[in-house]
Length: 148
Image (cartoon, rainbow, N blue to C red; front, side, top):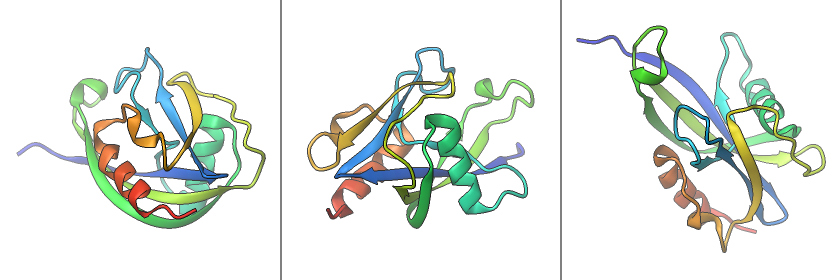
């Protein structure tokens, strides 16, 4: 039986003026190139949960946020080809959190794995984007339960 390497991640569903901030992976990204998702990532050892999601969003898009409630949870696999050091597939357990802005809504892409970001109308356009496979059902759940 192969060992399983498990990590924890948080994804920030940042809502502002009826829009959600989504990000697109860059074309040079080795995993899910040009696919869309929301800011967030894997937790570092010893990191507080609120500090973790704040750090990820600040690092990726330059925004300060206020983390709020968890509304969904899922897992996805990162293949061993993306993890060349240990050659072990990674299982990521992720939670989706509603977040509000603690700064203006001007984004600044700060990581090379992100190609672009957009504020998208939640009720009209959101589900038209080509999201990463694991987050698609979470997006559908978010839109279904979103209340202005």
